Every structure is written in C-alpha cells, then in structure tokens.
Length: 245
Image 1 (cartoon, rainbow, N blue to C red):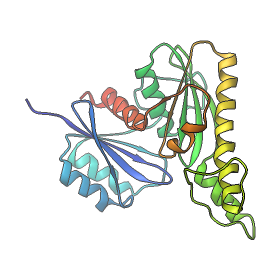
Image 2 (cartoon, rainbow, N blue to C red; image 1 turned 90 degrees about the horizontal axis):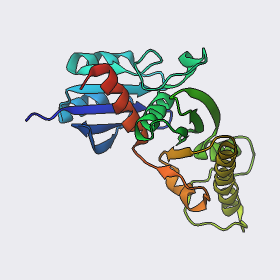
Image 3 (spheres, helix red, strand yellow; image 1 turned 180 degrees about the vertical axis):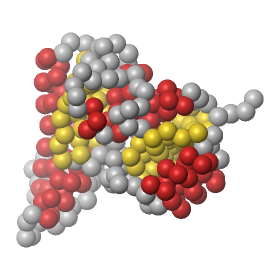
C-alpha cells in the first residue's frame, strides 16, 4: 500500500515552518531557515510529498507557489477555499489563512459545539466558532514577543527581555518586572476573555495553540484543550476538502 505524504506549510510573521503528514497522521514539524524558494525546495526534495498545502499571512515569494504546483497537487488557503466553516459576515476576505486553519481544526475536533480558539503567535487571536460552524469573529491583541519588543522600542532604558519560565509575582529587578508584567498580564487577559465567553455561551469548548503556549499554561485557571499541532491539523483538513486526498 502506497502512503500519501502531505506537507502543510505555515508561513507566519515570526517563523516559516511546515508539518509532514502521512495518511492523515502528523509525523514531524520542520522549521525552515527562511521563506525562500530554496528552503521550500529542500523540503520537497527530502520528503517527496504527493500533496502540499500553504497557509501564509506574509508577502512570500510567488515563485514558491509555482514550485509547489509543479511538484505536488497544491492548494493555497484563501477565503475562497472549501471549508467546514463559514461566516455570515461580508468580511470573509479579510480573515487570515491561519485563522481559517484554527477554526477548521476546531470544527473537526469538536463538531456542533461553540468553540473559542486561541492562537498564540506574533499576536494573540481569539476566534469564536458557534455550534453551527459559523465564524462570528473575535479579537486580536499583541503577542508575547511583541509586548517585550514594544517596551524596548518605545522607552529609552527598558531592555529587550526574552521570555523565561521562572519569575516571581513581585519583580525585584527590571527583568523580573518585565516578565511578571507581560506573562502574568497576558495570562489574566486570556482567562478574562475566556470567562466573558463562558458567561455568554453555554457548553463552550476552549482550544489553544502556539509556540509560546507553555509559558502561560501554569498560570491559567480555565480548563483549556491545548494542541501544539492545531494549525497544522486545520491546514491538513482544508487541504483534504480541496485536494481530495
């Protein structure tokens, strides 16, 4: 039996990466050196996929789409893609491919449930999917690294702080003040947003993903389904509907 290999590319503002699936099962993640044609070509040469799906929220080189289309059965996610989710609003065109992927993963994992999908990337995105599979919107706020960087950019003396695991509630120096303010502040923001949704919607499923997720998990009081591969699973799901693998 020949196994189908699908590569799901996720081009974000911070990183360019992809996941390899074999017959619907996640196998591994590959972090690309950059968003170049050469980096994508290296993945294709090594993995030899039959299918490729691209989710991009950046201005990538158009030649990447050409090389993917020439070497695989290829689909680029857009508002025109076939999806298990929709929206009643005329703003579908402005929704990023990464958000469609998150919503599609939630719809497949928790069908016919209200879902709040939280993506921790360059920004935090809160994405609400009702129990009829309709994306009603949500909110966007600055992400972890963006908050640290903005305090460095917009002040004369605050340093650029890197996230750390261990810090006190009461900061005793500049570094721990920044860590406490950003990580605990974001944790309380997330919990507060979740509480507001749970007050409004019964039987709400909350999902969270993103590379910065482990920094917040110890500080959140709400029960949240976490999955580091959630975006990839959504990209794979949209690809399946459009490519038929």
